[in-house]
Length: 341
Image 1: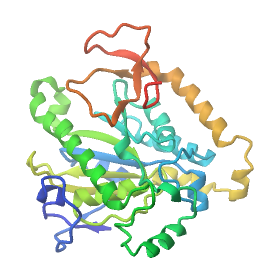
Image 2: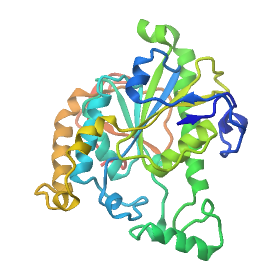
Image 3: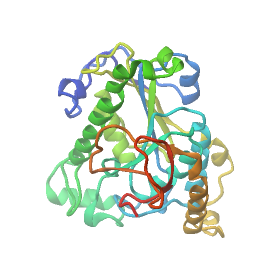
């Protein structure tokens, strides 16, 4: 797989907020797997690592999940554990998670294995495309309704849902903030960063989201269509060229749809009926993961950041109400949902 390189992305051409546009193919940058990328010794100045959530029942039945509360299957939990193991030891400045149940469950083992001090947030902008009244129906129903509407696939909006332009707008909003928050701050931190960070001039963040959002997010960043075919718990790496301008960053896709960490599951795959008959169902597995996470939250510290966060973004870890909150001091936090409960 090769993607265009050298042309400013639509995010650049439109002030980091333009739609995907067609452009002549330029000299290409080969996409490699994650292990090759880490061995290359040529990291980008700033990287966004993207992971799709683990398997859900809707994935197996080709049902529209949209923004419903679907949860991981037992296989999905196993996938999440394996991607967490592969990401273990990678330093992220922050982890950003869609606030839907399936992405939060995927994030659980990743957060537990994260380097202490890693910041973790949920963000509603990272949600999957809302399908409104079509959620719970077969995926084929989308095309039936679209034809009846007379609109293009991209502009068709189900009753109570979103179209793909809506998702693209959310993705651009999120990207703008990430550039301001992380790329801009790299130039201002200077002496506050460690010797190692100053030497590499690199920072990474991790985004845990959904197939449709990932397609729009990556396509908008590099200016070339990235198909909506992300596999469950696959990894993408989006990088900024080292010689970028802060105001006009140039993105390249370094790693795409990498699932090498799931090879053991694929080799040991069992018939779907056997999975469905497993004694440990998705709900009991989720309860087990929640208990482990709550026990492990003392391993992850959270420090306040300067500046207010947007209403769509919420901390995954909030301080116990019984504890005092010293200004800008690392404390242990327990997990709450996006409404602070």
